[in-house]
Length: 173
Image (cartoon, rainbow, N blue to C red; front, side, top):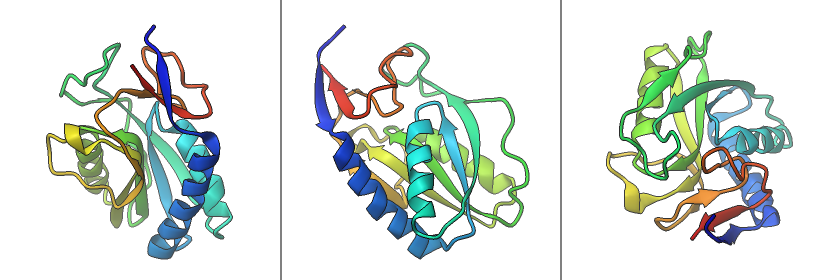
């Protein structure tokens, strides 16, 4: 396995999440539904939901599962919905949350899917943005950190099923 270089320690992530939750609460109010893109976003969503609670928000939480990576470090470019989209989004404010936006295809695909589900509003939030890899026009409404074109692991993000447990975010080298 390649070496790892820590990009963001857990305390840095925690501080950014508190600021991010304040931004989201100010923009969306206290009545929103978080829809997370699995699998990489699960740790981020758990911590973000608790940070939103400290902002007097009580978000509903649901998930969708998309696939484009498989066991690779590069996306295939083909986005696939695994399972069903979340039910009961009619008229709801939705915050779509992903771990990393690189090509932008997954986030764009999920936004379209949720808007077709009659959500009143769909705003986006990403823990990490990798603009050097952007293939489609996609800018997150709320963003944790911008990173260079490196493959990252930790804080829920994996490589071939490994490293999700790490409390920090590292670049594989």
